[in-house]
Length: 597
Image (cartoon, rainbow, N blue to C red; front, side, top):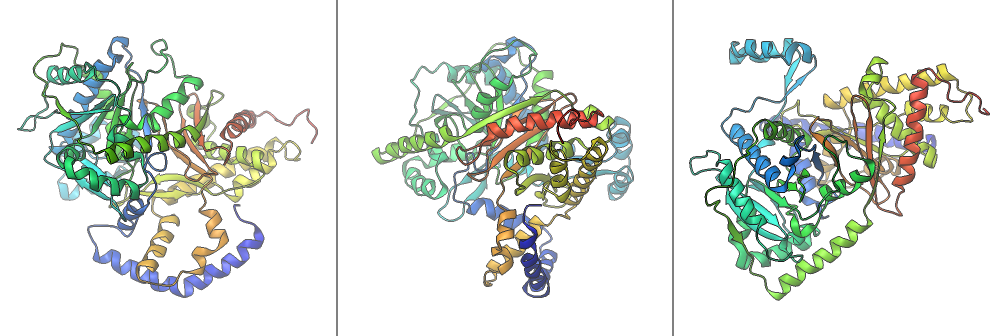
């Protein structure tokens, strides 16, 4: 659907040549290498290296975020109360993981049967050597959790050619940033227990009471730079600030206490489309002087208690972050600390020693990033015409309908099909990361055309095409989740050819291949009762970053973009109309009735 029929002929010949020639050799080498490396997978090393070698800034280009729903009790949404409880819950989650007590991540194909207390109790009595068989029979598949060690106590360190991800497994502290000033304090005792709520609240209260003016020239700005520039500056920064940088790198995480204040709204009121945009922008980039973008994650709490998790992407994916996100949300509501501050808190100021050159670099980094974030734009849609419950009753896949809607909206806007990416976790495999679902298909193109106002397709034909799209998308999703997609495999073969010193292969320089991999529509979804907003940026200058979530009764989408490369506002407007048409056809209404066809 993305490339023309004329182009596919020459591409097909290149594929055949690849399969019978160099591709056959590379595949044999890849299989042999995979068998020899039992503690890895064929894709985990090259995929990690892809992130680490990319020289672009991690902000907007890679790092996503997830925004929390408010605490339902307004008095607990103050910056001090919310940050105290989220830090406490984070420490408890870390302790549970560290002590080997965190229950495994499980993909339940039949949750009514396996995601129950009865099944969990029964499986505990099955010998470990046979427990996998019991889980298999119940269609409950454990997921790989090897990303979890990097969820805490880690940082990405800039290097001239390839960054490194480092861990400090003995650390007990977090770093807090407030008004561009850095602080650290312990949240675990020397024996590894969680420090009490009174002490954590005392530490945070001391930090929030620091009346120094905002430091817009903080070293946090430097983490927004391209990786090569940042690597060079960091090597100079380390001369007088090695211990300070190790404090930041080794912290369990970074807590960002923002001066930014989100527009207030009554308790329990859903976020409006208008209010969602500043929330997303603050979560995705905020003020660089109050972030450390290289950290495993930044826990952000605004002045009026809006909270979010912004995470660096090279170490892991959404599955592990969402697990942390969900569990600390539930825990910080169930186990609120409501007492007074007490104790010393043990706050240590982290004040860097900066030469004039380093100070200027921080100022220039802020000015440079301000231009980037000012060009970053987004628009949102909240469609309440259908939700997950309605679509499941109609026996169509909610995710397929979302993806079809994106394809139809872009078709109506441009009359074209473009490279489209949907992320799919492959955590069911050892060292699994992600695979690509390709939602732009022959079926979605046919459906987009048939829904056109001047096309003769009637209600029955449109519904049939819509259901064909749902069926196709379900197949693609299952194939991707089971490691049967083609993107990661092709990437690994191309990477292997380069590492073996092979000449560039015609298949990978083919215009059709290039067009397919120029991702105009980069899409991803996460759904959780704890999630209010989330997002990421477009991955190419002329693309759209489409984050979406299908809830029981409504559907939300945000489209990020960089004008004039693309027009997210026009896309969102078309998407609203498409959703109305999809709703009409699914409810048995001929959307073309009374119109000229």
